[in-house]
Image (cartoon, rainbow, N blue to C red; front, side, top):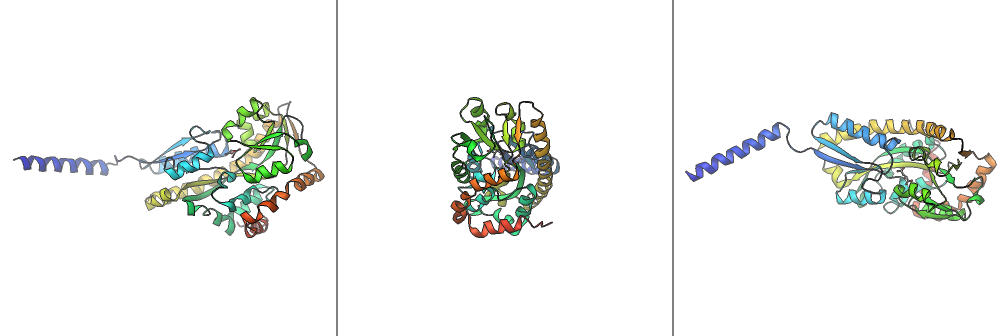
Length: 335
Ligand code: LMR
């Protein structure tokens, strides 16, 4: 009698389990996507677009949670969080990866890429595509390149030539290349997470910083530092990354749909980045207190000359083959 009751309970449990699976009641797979910028920047919009498309097209099978604006993690923390399985996606800027791949420092070299077109050409080239897997040995999988824009310099006083930065405390991303670059300029570089930039400007901790127009406009940083010089000396772009273990463990059909969505969103983010580099600059320029200096060719040469010694210091660790490949590929459209 007892065993008959046990058997019926067992059958009932199995029935409930199979019914819930067949009705799709199993918990959706969760992708947590952390980034540090505002939701109205190209990367912020891209993250939301990714969530919407994934949840619509993989209806009930995958859910996406976004942690924007350093809400949970700085970029440096996010990379570790990926490896610990606390998040599944992040899109840090290139300098944040320098501990994991020295080759990626090629993206940080001043005056190597002077336009979005050049960076696109390199990213699509064979070497550019190979760099996406340059962190797989430590468990980080590069999925796509997302763009933002050229970096400009801003300070609390007018800046025209490199000597104007002498002695100024400058917030920089966590990059050895950028530290050297500002040291060459006679400034004092301070590595600081992006989430602390606005407060550090408001509180006078730093005199200036460098960044792309979209991040400046989103944070209204022009109200805190109205002087800009368009050195456009390096490109602020991102690598969308996951952990190798997470990405490779996804069921094939889900991974293929995520890849397709990433392709679409990447195209949209990169075209948005191109547009906002102009529209955000225009918006900032309309503020009557703002001064944007566009250096003449001679002045630009002065900035180049001042920053170029950085290349020598990093060419061994980046690899001259990678730097050479970038120099060739940037002028050769691949598509
Ligand atoms: C920064 O740290 O200044 C940028 O990398 C922020 C970002 O993600 O655009």
